[in-house]
Length: 350
Length: 117
Length: 109
Image (cartoon, rainbow over all chains, first blue to last red; front, side, top):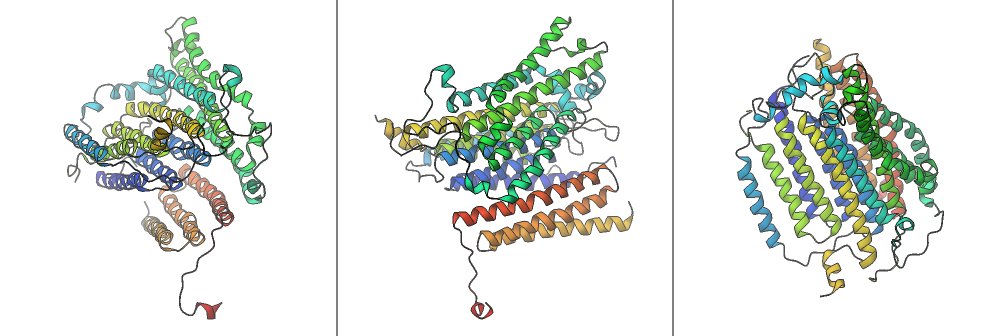
């Protein structure tokens, strides 16, 4: 088939998903039980991912599902485990924030009136750079997935900056929570907490469930194979380094949730994770330096091979691999940092 | 029908933005503020991707069977934004954990009171 | 495409959607966690099964059908495990099953 559905059905699907998202967002504000708020935010992220696929942004949908509905929920739940799960009733009066929000909303709605109508193929957004990318991406880089070609090659600088941001965020979390104080001299252990010792005992509840352990052992290789598939098929279909990195980290996180953090640390030790976090950034930046050494501009992959097109393809593959290494190790390192934090003793302030 | 509500996506984007903004400003619980910030960020993703969509187009993966593709450029920008968002969320949550250990509470009012005038 | 196949695919798609709606209503109306898990498993098994069957009939014998088979197998592996984990967590948290009071319930037990 060459037709892609009717506009009416697309608009209806769009409208339903958007309304559901508004309901979920309002529920997040109104609920007092933070556990329910976190799960509702996961539902909201899944709805957003579905909406992204309905809006033809398949790469974005996959990333939002993996990151927003997977990693975010895991991190929020681990923080709830370390703090508390109910929100205290607000003592402040909400009238001023409500007025501010409504005024901002009205101003923004007034601003959107000038935007071109939704779905218009003649809108200015569709007519400048986008047709160029669509026409030239496969010819120049050999990757049918235009998003991957633009991400890794045409807009490679932005992606390098993004990998650096992930790296910085991971290092920040590790410094705050994981006791890298022996390198920096800053004390990071909470004041009243007991020393957890080298090997905290695993939670007995999870150890006595045969079903979960067997299922996780069956799922783990499937998830890792799927992560590899998404990574290397990202040139030809939806996928790429980010989605694959989050999926691979999710596999180890699942293992750690069921078998305990010490078991996960035996599979993916902290030293290896700490080594891999900057390695991806180095691979990415190093590809640019290699292009410089071979006579081209920085991050100009055409000079990496005798034929410019295969050079571009090679450059995209290497760069996406660098992204995968940094994203997966950063997500895993962040999870280790949150999961290894001993719970606080006593409610008195220091 | 297609020109019945040309700006519906944009209005819902604005509603979600306002909801997220309200959660950040009006609620004192820090975890809820961070979740509200995440909602705000996702509404911005919607704001970028909605104008890239062409009704009757398909995902920007080139193949012989299709001729009309949606705009790939917002997808690239938002891919970056999503992963930056999770990095920000992780840092914010790490700060919340440390604040809880220092003050015993994740409510902004209680932390202000513990700090004193 | 073939008329019979088209009609069959539409019937299974609508059935799948109907089971999802029934599961959703069940999750709303049933009294406690354990009964709601029954309703949720309805969505995961019958809902997804019929929807995948309808989509496979629409796609014919192709790569799409193979991917749908993988998805159904994956859901078939993970959904009962998730239900088991939820039920066990609820049991350990101390949630007791609640029955809807109805006259004549004591005689049936």
